Length: 272
Image (tube, rainbow, N blue to C red):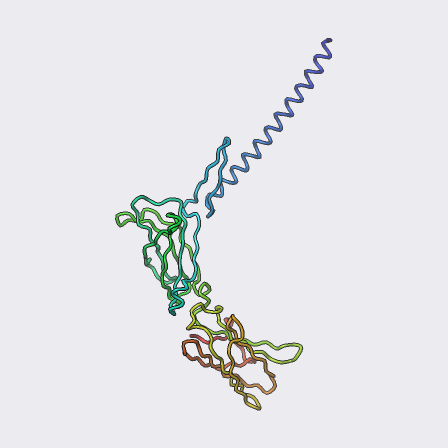
């Protein structure tokens, strides 16, 4: 074989090698970028799968909590009390430590604490039920592991509004709208924060005393599962409406509502 032909084939071989090396370099750079991006998510709440040299392992988030949730305590609600159930799924428990739920309202400096219990199905899932004060809607809580009276590990603090979680504290919103097709007005009486899970705070009955040229008195009961009351009227000659709300536990609240008057930015409502 001639020298020129050998040189040509050697150059073709060199080009192939360079192309293969380039592909391998790009693949490694992409893999490195993907791995770094996954490692940068260590602050996320969910565990992260990190692959290296064909092996895989799960790294829990820094505070050791794999999942958490908070919900209304329906057993307490059935007794007319406000309460929540907090649940934490942790990656590991410090041997010998007691697991506590630390909680406080937004205006409290000190934490209150109650012991959490693990579930039968999973010894690393801990729950606790605590009563809450509906006059302080912002609720802050965290899980603590305590050993010999010292907090040896604590999760990050979480915050929720228990007013929205429990569907309200019994405050009632008053609103109105003019229906364009009929020129009628409609008054709406509803829970300011939704329908309370506590039965005693729900609307049982609403009386409207409509002050106009021909006065009217209307008694209404909620016509939906949401517990809202709606009533349509003709605005002509209307001065104001006296609204009386009777709650399920017999408590009564009354106020005057004028659909045409200026109202505060946060709306017109009856405070429980």
